[in-house]
Image (spheres, rainbow over the protein chains, first blue to last red):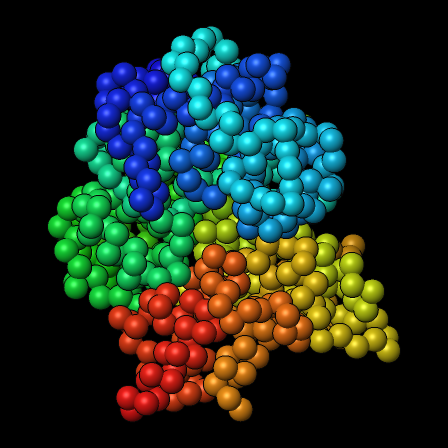
Length: 508
Length: 83
């Protein structure tokens, strides 16, 4: 096994230095250029006495700068913490403080930046990428990337079993979950994915998924591990533009969540585009309606379509459905990827029989080290070496896995996994609100949309617009409830816990 | 109500959740300013089709027609004149 992501990239820099690694608008970055920029970041951090395992927060959209910072941070022995760029200052501050990050590489035009800098004060060194006339920092991207020093001691990279990256999956004030991954976790998962996707240096993927999430993170590293090219397109807002770019860049691959494919199928005619270069597409991030899979493969029958399932806690990937089984096993998320064991457990932690629904539990070198600084939460999901995913499923007689639902309350909306508690926490801050419950309601495009059910204090009035406006100030836009109901009571258990399943039943 | 005013009110009400006119400039790019996302744009199309009795074809779903108040107003007026 290669020791680290940085070593994987370095191997490709030696093998295909002039190949295109990242294409972003008009900018085309070769492996050699990416490597030099990454080393510039590493040199700066080392010169400023970065210690092994220090955390480096990255608040950048998908861009060559994001990638160079991620690899540069790890080359210097740091732990890369990619932050959700849609988040508001309160979540960002929460994650920065929780991770104890000592550095922040941030987009100078990020709308939350001044609030964030005010909140974090002098506790963190900041590198601004781009121009900002009102915020001045000691370090800027332009003055660190001019290094032409190709030499760097890769022995700084953390040991393969030590933390290398943290991905935050939720932002509740009391309990942010920072999935901590080692190089062994990441590299093992990359090698397993490469084994079934069969990526090579000739592959060119158009990527619309954010790198700060595990799916996008995995796409980035798998393609850089083989010397392939990643073409960045940071929005699915105009699906025609995405398809035009797939054609003009002669891409071989495309990855999405169910809503990505729903948008393509709903608002474009795939047959109008020459997608003959596309070899494969992958889908993860929740169940894609079988009818959409059939429609997609009718439009582009020559591609291999991989349905996949995973979790951030598993470095990304746990199972995949071999494309030749797509129709025979329609609706299944497939079989374990190489190196992963899957079992379905009942509530007593016993393995259930085939066809019986239970919780998906997984074991392998890709399972996270744990949640950052949170041994209690880690113990709740990793028991006897098995990751308890919170997802419910059954296995058929051929060993193929079918997801039946979730045992946890997380809402899946588009590519986002959202804790209802985060939203409840914010809405409950409104003085008019007595209590609030948040659930997922079904949606054709996004899978689920967010619904908030609110009980007001006696004599108080509140407009749905006021609730949404308050959420917009404090939450990422994708966490703003689409639907808001005012009601008299919220169903609860005898001990006062919200019965979300009862609320969900009402909105089916 | 003038087209521009109606479009502005819709965006302010549904994506910025405010009556404060100063929060939205007519030339603001919805994509660059993060005002609307990929599913929001489908709602905007639905609004245009319902409120202005216009059909927005898939090919017309491009930033030149939809990515700011100005672009939407121009697009609606062009379609109305053509119809």
